[in-house]
Each structure stands twice: as C-alpha cells, then as structure tokens.
Amino acid sequence: MSLFKQMDKIDIQDDKKMKESSEMEKVKCLIVGSGPAGYTAAIYAARANLNPVMYEGLQPGGQLTTTTEVDNFPGYPEGVTGPVLMDDLKKQAERFGTDCRWGMASAVDFSQRPFKVEIDNEKTILAEAVVIATGATAKYLGLESEEKFKGSGVSACATCDGFFYKGLDVAVVGGGDTAAEEASYLAGICNKVYLIVRKDYLRASKAMQERVANTANIEILFEHNTKEIIGGNTVEGVKLIKRQGQPDESEHTIKVQGFFVAIGHHPNSDIFKDYLNTDEIGYIKTIPGTSKTNIPGVFACGDVQDPVYRQAVTAAGSGCMAALDAERYLGEKASL
Ligand code: NDP
Image 1: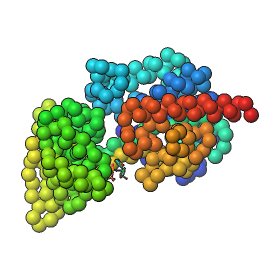
Image 2: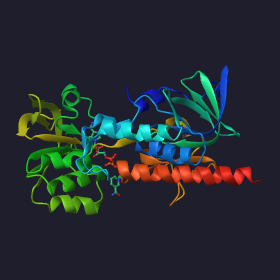
Image 3: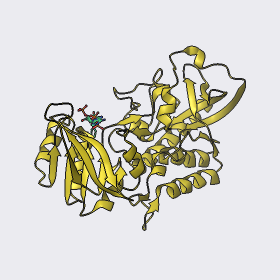
Image 4: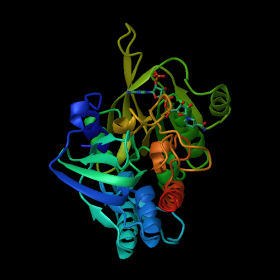
C-alpha cells in the first residue's frame, strides 16, 4: 500500500485523532519521510548536530525504490539501481548519527510548540523543527497488467526511464501537461510515441498542445482507453478501446515496448493540510527560493512541494535547503 493511500484513511478533521498518546519523546529535528529529499536533509541536519530523527514511512526510500536503473543521479558514472541509491543515502545519513526508524506520521498538531507529530497512531514526537519529505505518489490506471509490468516496461517517469526505450516505440497515457511533456521528451529518444487520450481534446496548455501536434513522431489517439498491457516478460503492446461506451466502440492493439503513465501525481500532504498552505492539487507551498512553509519551524522539501521538476537530484537539493533552513531557525530560536 502506498504512503498516500495509508494517509488518506486518516481523518484529521477530527481533533480527537491527535490524541495524547501514552508515549512521548522530545526531538530537536524531526524528518518525516525518506527518499532523496529526506535522506539528504538528514545528512545535513546530522552534520549540523541537530540529532535528526527520521520516520521513513511505509516505503522506506520512497518512489525510487520501485525503479530499476537510475542513470541521471550525479556521481554514478555507471548508473545505479534505485534501491542501492537509497540504501547508500541512508547509510550516509546514519554515518553522521541520523536515527532512522520505521513508522509513519499519522497526524500532526502544528498549532503549538513544540510541534506534535503522531507516529502510527500510537506515539507522539514533540519536535522543535519538522522537515516534511513525504514525496508524491504517481497515479496509475489500476490495471492488473500495469502492476505486472511495473519496472519492466511500465513507468511513471519518462525522464527516469525513457533512455531504456531509445529507438523503440512507446505509448504515453494522459492528456495534461505532464503527458504532453513526457511525450515530447520521449519523442526525442524513441522511434514513435503514441499519446493515448481518453477525451477528444488535450487538457495540456496551448503551448504544449502545439508542441505535441508539431512533433512528427507523436501520434495522438484521442478517445482511447487502455484495456490491457500485453507481453511476456516485457511489454509488447497495448490493447485499446476506442470510443468506449459509444455505439461505434471498437478495440485494437498497438505494438509498443514501453508504456508511460502520466495521469497526474498526488502529493502526500493530506495530514498537513489543516496547517500548511497548499496549492489546489495539494502541493505544499514554500516561500520561493527556500523550504519554509507558512509555519516558521516547519519545512518542506522534495516532491511534496515540487509539481514541476520531480527529480531525485532536485529533491536531494531541496532536502539540503530544508536542513540548512532548520539549522538557522533552531539557531535563531536558541539565541533569543
Ligand atoms: P492533470 O490532472 O492536469 O492531467 C491528467 C490527465 O490525465 C488528464 O488529461 C486526464 O484526463 C488524464 N487522466 C486522469 N485519469 C485518467 C485515467 N484513469 N485514464 C486515462 N486518462 C486519465 O495532471 P498533470 O500531471 O498533467 O498536471 C498536473 C498539474 O501540474 C497541472 O496543473 C499542470 O499544468 C502542471 N504541470 C505543469 C508543468 C509545467 O509547467 N512545465 C509540467 C507538468 C505539469 P481528463 O482530461 O479526461 O480528465
């Protein structure tokens, strides 16, 4: 189960949910969520003697642990697998004394200091500073065949995995800006890109629509839904339904070796929404150029606050910023 799905179950409107747990612990700097942002924040916070405690969430290491090769993270000339990269980052964070723990934040109370963060509905952490690095979850179509080929032909990130489909034919599903961007990116690498759009128009911005329309090797399949991804050990094609539910509904198959899902992401910010400003999708708003949220002492980094770049390296960079911001905040607080 994804981190988001678990969090979604928690009704934070109900004040009683943030109950006084029997077990309480005071920490200086709490990092919620692992992944490149969380681990990098931990490395910097630990080296600054903030004694960070990290709760890793249900998927320690975050989204990258579900990918195979990562070729674009600087410092790995031969590439690295997602799980190994995350393990390296974790070891580096622990080397400087980060206390990495299993468990996930189930409720928060940022209305008073120290901030209260409840873990797994049973323990309360009282934190002087909180770094949120809970990431975002890519949405998938929910097909069984999609699950089967995740990591071996099905991906939710063209920038991460597009290279493996160099010269091949691929499909992208979605009609928004992300899908249009992913299709354009893949068109520069692949032989042919099918853009599968369920409506008869694109939701993407005018500029992106024009870009897609003017790219010779992108073919837009309007009014198409994905029925099944087919293949043996890897993806070989996609069964599509045209004009589903209409009298002239029909089915056909396209041959592709890669299938990219680009139907949106869900930032894992649900438990913070009562306190932190978010955009309409749920991305936590930070003061531009910083990791600062609307509550001094609460910082956000990585994909939970980044609807645009969503890369491991940008997440790591923003994790560094969050730790530095937390260090300065705690330093100023101590000198008052
Ligand atoms: P959006 O929600 O904008 O678009 C999602 C697309 O996926 C829609 O076309 C939707 O179809 C389709 N979709 C959703 N569910 C399914 C499904 N089950 N089957 C088939 N298709 C489905 O998400 P994006 O990630 O594209 O964008 C999110 C936000 O981020 C937007 O505001 C966007 O503008 C922004 N963004 C900006 C970028 C930039 O500025 N460079 C880059 C990327 C995103 P339908 O239209 O029928 O609902």
